[in-house]
Image (cartoon, rainbow, N blue to C red):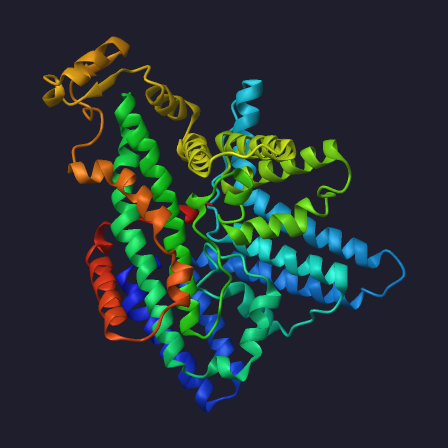
Length: 489
């Protein structure tokens, strides 16, 4: 079941919320939580029953492993370490089997020129997210002991439908205590209103903005065989904006849906395109993934405590895993490498103490990110280089023939500018769609983000009207809406 679907928005979410508060009012709290687990598994089953089976299998294994690990915490022998290694290995192998088996088989086939048929595997939706959540829980037990939750609490934490598919990657310490509070099961009109408010913002981001940007991005990457300078830049910028509004839109909807149940999820986006450098960007983009990799990979590897060489290796390894986590393709690995390389370069740059004008810093970093995102979006190397060749003008720089009489533009013909169709290789659509990616740049730079709007939210007719308009427009455009991009990761 798509979160951006009529069945979820108009049927599943309101019915589950109503039943949850009803059960909690007239029955012990454990029954309302058990109901949410069942509803969450039904939610997964409506995608594919097989997804729910993999999810509950993962939950059962990790609950047993976590309980055994907690019981062995004070064991003077090696039992605790062995349990931990086996549990972590199981999670990594489970994720690796479904997500990377065919990737590695294909790589072996290419390198050694042998014919290896891919396995008929279906990637369980959400496995990248709930696997990381459970690894964090196991690691916390191994480090500190305790955290022995009852099965219903733990199962609900992992399976809770607002975030199980694409995050945020919430820690057990953030979610399970909230469900344990008696007030969580009580209907809270203020939280419902705030939840619907940010949910509507997310729906609007997805259906109105992200799916409109996808028209140009998909046309340039997947349809066009060649791209001119203008076409390539519009293609790359459209995807750069699409990925932000698509994923932040889902996160808003997840935060809103959880808030209806009185559950506060962690912030996942904080205006990342306002970043002036790579370090600032990763403190703003996909925050819950960044903190997980910092807490459970980068710092355990040694962080920046073991010398410059080791620090550089740790940074690069972390970003290579970031790339591979996002997708089973070498282009994702290369995208991770680019982020790691720039992070290392920026680390040395800061030591020089050289300051840069903020506008220039933003311009340089944003364009670097836009170029690097080409490897994130392209399905293969050919598509990536097709876009990059166009961006550097190797396929010609065309502007509208209506400008041919301008003396200014005539002078620029000496540097290769030509008069002709600037969008003949892209699918026909309204001009506003082509340039929406450019118009959105000042919007993301100078307006408040969803978190800030939610913090300032107060009931009133203006907010009610805004929610009604966003929901109405979002619902009207649902028929053309596709799946969220991060569902593939």
